[in-house]
Image (cartoon, rainbow, N blue to C red; front, side, top):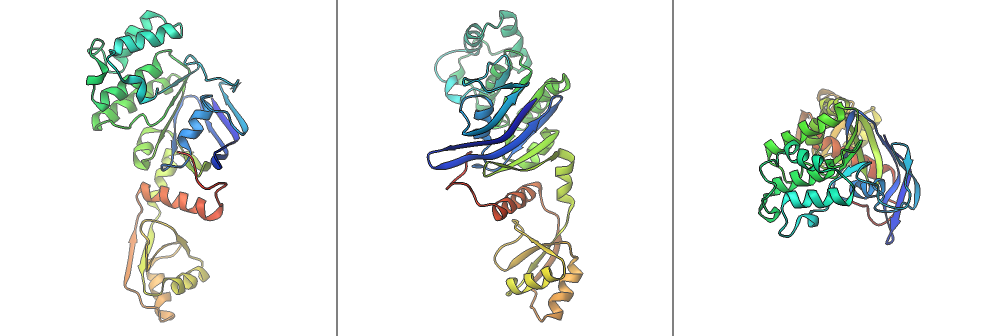
Length: 310
């Protein structure tokens, strides 16, 4: 299990991770979801021991950080893309990694078949497509057969079939009782891939719930109302128990309203002589739900520094 408690990482005058707490449990795929700058990659680097936290604790399988990167036998992670440059073949890259970490030759022979690279061991990596490079990075993460997989944006650069392949691949270690954690910035894609969603914003946990519960949030309707007097109408609606949400559905002169029907919004506007230009009921996409969650986070808590981490 991955356990992060009150983790903070401040450097260069900014706070990349801000009192972050989260858990990824065995037997499930957990997605750390957030936009660029949410702190996902900064958090992963702390979990992997590539960076040292300012405060807080991180344990993986009950083992705390020890001032050095975690072994690939403990945690499998995607290497940096720069590690795949040059004239080497996939077989040479996997073989060198295996020798460096005491991994047997048998495992080097198995992993290409698991990751769709069985026909590619002698092909130079520089000729690979982005999707094939991603498969090789995942093969490197799996090589030591670790109990924990911590993959930063494993779906990046993949076509539709590649995305399906990664989803099937991640299911296997999770079904074996291993801990699988991934990051991403596309809400719908992560909801289809993971069992559990942890939303990060400005280096903090905004939400942690099952993917089914997260998807259910898109079923909650929003009343979108357009008016030349949005502030006046918002005050009236709040006085009657409605709430305004910051969402892509809203904008200049438009409000996204929850907790009230469109009929009631229209009636209150008429009662207070407020002109209505648009009145509609819509259901938000998961991307819009994510935007609402992160906008709410920004509204209730000021950032600890001038910016957040990726």
